[in-house]
View 1 (cartoon, rainbow, N blue to C red):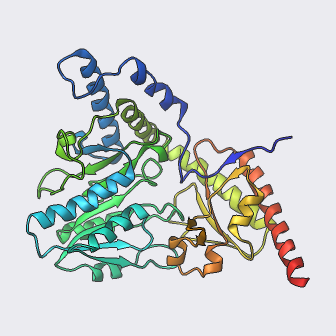
View 2 (tube, helix red, strand yellow):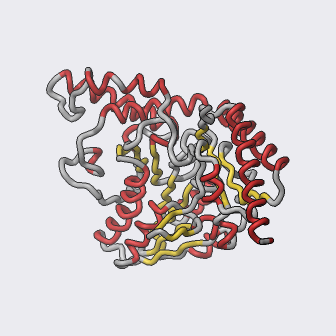
View 3 (cartoon, helix red, strand yellow):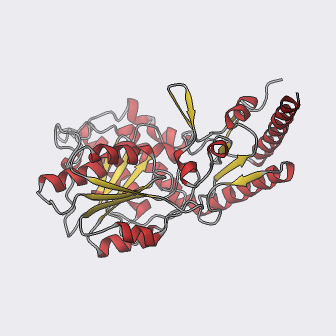
Length: 395
């Protein structure tokens, strides 16, 4: 009898919500015009759909529709935000602003663009975080100075789910004339985001983290004064207010828009349900196993996230024992060498502990029965692996 498959890797990606899939379908075969073709009804229909989606996206984060720039996803949005601000400043001869501040726990889509800018005239400060994953605000204040152009901080971490103090960081940046960029790929639709209240200048969004399609996202670009200078990273046609050229993928944009609307309307109830399921998962694992530790702050955390270290158990071996359950190690394989997660190392975990850690990502479609299945499978697998290791050590 086949084992029940369970998907608990919702930080990596989410399944498309059937409501979103159904809303997208007509735009592949019926309403297929180019939104930029304004001289006929086919194009006008597509443009109306894009405009409606732009309003839905903006509504989720308290923005204006004109401030939403369509991209291929959060990675492109991060690159456009970070490189765009830096290159605009350099081109404008703003010599006194060539410093960027970010965190060591950021996604590679932020860290890599920052490292690329270090090859030119920019200096980057990579702030360490505290053991609970939260930034030390005093250290952030100290790290900035008169040459600081940009601060880029992820709202909710993709591995440990820790939520950074956006409003406090945003207020400080605004007071000091520093551009504030937020990678919100993991937080959008799961916890409240208000770009005005948080003083956010740039914010990256991805559809496939909120039950929308892959390959589509957005960048919020604050309008108003002082004007935010941003150099495009993709030229050719002047689409999206000149920030991002390319024919708009109407079906995907419709999916992103509805994903934002649904997430906003169901956020509170979904968060409560996920919080309850996460507690059930944690209680079950803790009751069945000892020597299990939680990585990251449990109070300031996404409701569907749990990251655990299982002492004396290699995470990769654990996942190989339960292939019917989708989990993540938070590790990356580079040239066949397993490296521990840079996020967990930033928390102060030793090499062995980082390689013994597993990320659980609960989502909209996770059920209580599935959580029970995961608890049973993980407890049995960890117990078996520890017993095997003990026998091996004795022999």
